[in-house]
Length: 70
Image (cartoon, rainbow, N blue to C red; front, side, top):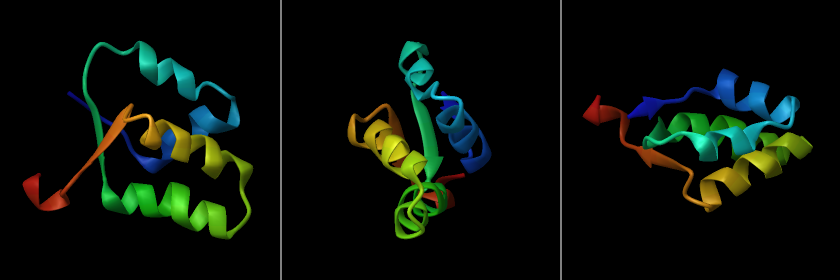
């Protein structure tokens, strides 16, 4: 299992390489705070990258886990 943070997601989005996450042969997970920062706040602030990151979550490439589990 791989865990991804907001910095990695934003960096992949900025260089238009989020699709590389689809190539990984393992489950990718993150916490709700990362989703809120990268998607919800990003959309509110008008960042186009936030829509691309949201697509990755919508396609279930990355799952959201409860931080209490870790």
